[in-house]
Every structure is written in structure tokens, then in C-alpha cells.
Length: 414
Ligand SMILES: Cc1cc2nc3c(=O)[nH]c(=O)nc-3n(C[C@H](O)[C@H](O)[C@H](O)COP(=O)(O)OP(=O)(O)OC[C@H]3O[C@@H](n4cnc5c(N)ncnc54)[C@H](O)[C@@H]3O)c2cc1C
Image (cartoon, rainbow, N blue to C red; front, side, top):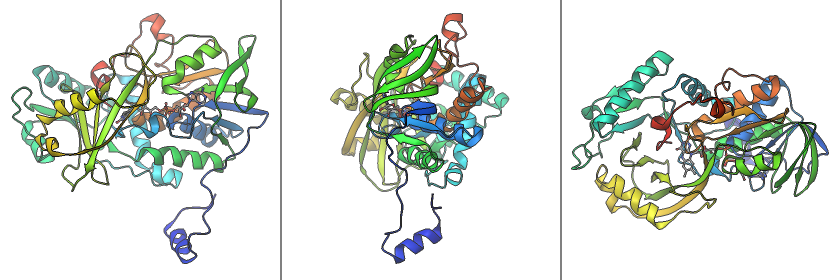
């Protein structure tokens, strides 16, 4: 793999950019791999990357039915934060956030990490208590967050209206090193690094069956033929239930569409991310100037990856009291992704009833921020059978009642 650098850009500029090589190869599948990861979203690619980087397992294929990053990874609103309530979540999300800090250097690919700060607004007395509690928990966990009053919110977000008639802004939970990154670039950066290690990323190849023998996976069936493997990682977000069914077990998950929209590009007006969870909406401004606006999930289970009119109306109506300026914006486009929701709003990173089959899913509305930490932990779990990062997030917790309740931190927020 050629190293990207200022020197390489200058050299290519002089020869009309004819010397760039493809960022990743597009090979045909081999007959057998040491490990197969199903799903080339951020979590699947990061898992493959850390399998190679941390454990030297490089005879790996990542199998993707569409194009890499084309699932939720390329459809999300890119918020990165780690201000969760429970200890196992804070550890996992903070590991991810801290890996994001130098992921561009690590991958030699600009993922445009922008730690511009994230505020979660408190607009009810209940939220004040909830966020102050989270700030105290974060202090004990070593996650740097802070409770701030309304005047500080106004300093950080001049366009905000503090005195809404229904939901005035009463303060907020502020994470200074939270922010955003370019979602496609995260997938592309990991994909390029995986390909450079000799891993095969096989796109346009749907997994249609999981073959097992004596309680262990022996391979998968795909639209490009059967492939054998020693270990299987299922990392397919909203399609996890379908893959689990192929492997012969069930998951405590619901698949629902989550929607977002962007406005026309406007001049810079907001340089932090603001989440308003009571009214159910959040907003940031992209580098192109668009206001990136996220809403809620559909109220019914479905597999659609489209937006719908009633969501635009609901989301904009929710935010307009707090951000009156958005009433004058034209909306550019909207879209949806299929997210996989668990009952406790925490992910599943776990062994499965099949000995050498592992699952990484249940990130629901907020898994983009977790990609590097999830990949790190999942790779450790697959390579060694155990990871301190993932040990609380097993499938068994739903049988044993060991829920990791993050419905306040993750129920609305992303
Ligand atoms: C509108 C929206 C906004 C969001 N905002 C945020 C946010 O601001 N911050 C945040 O942290 N998170 C956010 N999320 C959540 C985040 O996007 C997801 O949690 C995360 O991207 C999940 O990544 P993944 O790699 O697990 O899944 P995906 O990126 O969905 O990848 C799974 C892949 O598996 C493939 N696949 C499925 N079935 C098969 C099969 N049978 N064979 C082969 N391949 C298959 C799919 O094609 C897909 O590419 C948002 C999600 C949406 C939809």
C-alpha cells in the first residue's frame, strides 16, 4: 500500500494523478479463510482490522452483500461521544472515542475526526437530575464531561433560543472532546488498511446460509459460492436476526428504520453538536455547511432504508422552538437506515450457541461512535475467547437479567 502524504499529493499533482492505486482490492473469494466477518460496515471492518493488527490473523474475508459502508455506517449523523451511564458502556465508548483521536494517523487515512464538543440539552427538571447523575458517574469512570448552565450553553451555541415556551433550555451535559468524523472515511480507512494486510473484502456477495457441524460453524453459503472458515463473526446490524436464524439461534432484537435529513448548505453558524432529547432531535453543521438533523426511529418494526414525510415534519417541529432559524431553511435530502435495537439499549458482543461463531450487533441508534472500540474488543474476543471490553455485553445477560440499562443515554440520542 502506498503511503498517503503531502509529498505523495504533490508528486501526483505533477503527473496528473495517474499514479494512485486503488484503495482496496476486489478479489474473488478463496475456498477457505481462518476467519470470516459478515458485514462490511464500520464494526465488521474494524473487527477485521484489529484481528490482523493485534493478533496477526490476516487470512480473513469480509463479506458484504452491497457496497462497503453502504449500511448504517454510511447513513448516520456521525456523532461521537462517550458520556454513557453504566461502567461497562463508559469503558467501551471511551476506548472508542480515544481511538478516534488518532485514527487518521493510525490508518494513514483522513477520517476528519472533529472533536468540536457535544451538548445534550436538559429541557426538563427530570433531565437536569439525569444528566447531573451522568456527569458524576463519568467523573468516577474517568470520562471527561461537565454539567453546564444555560448561559454557558448560549455562549457555545449563539443560535439557540433558551426561552422556548414549552421546553426552555435549563442547562446541558457537555463533553468537550466529543464531536464528529466523516462516516464513509472511517469505513474506507479500515477497508484500505485491511486490504493492505492481504485480507479480502468481497462486495456484492450476500450470505445466504451458515453451515455447521457438531455445534461448530464450518462455513457459509453466499451468492458467490460456499466458503469455509475456522471462525465466523456476524456483524450485520439491522439484519442480525436474519443471520442468526441462518445459524440456528434467536436474538433479542428489533429492527426499525431510523431517519435523518440535511438542509441546504449555509454559512457557519454552529460549531458544536447539540442534542435535544426531550423534544427528540439533534443537529450539527457539516463541513459543507449543511445542517445535519437527526430524528427518531419509526414506531413499528421494518426493514426500509428510506425517509418518510411525517418524520421530517415531526423532527423539524420538535427542534424549531429551540432553533427558530431552521424554520427558514430548505431541506436538501433525507434517508433512513435499519437499526438493531435491544431492550436495554446496549449492544451485544458475544459468543453464540455455535462454538466458533461470534456476534456483534444491537448498536441501535448509536453505534458509529463505538466502531474502533467495538472492533478492538470483538477482535480480542474472536482471537482469544475473552475480552474485558466485551464481557458484560454477552447474549446471556438477557436470560440472566444482567441488563446494562442505557435507555437514558441511548434511547433517543446517537
Ligand atoms: C439515520 C441514522 C443516524 C445515526 N446517527 C448516529 C450517530 O450520530 N452516532 C452514532 O454513534 N451512531 C449513529 N447511528 C447508528 C450507527 O450508524 C450504527 O450503529 C452503526 O453504523 C452500525 O454499524 P455496523 O457496521 O454494525 O452496521 P452497518 O454499517 O449497517 O453494516 C452492516 C453491513 O452488513 C451487510 N449485510 C447485511 N446482511 C448481509 C448478508 N446477508 N450478507 C452480507 N452482508 C450483509 C449490510 O449490507 C451492511 O453493509 C445512526 C444510524 C442511522 C440509521
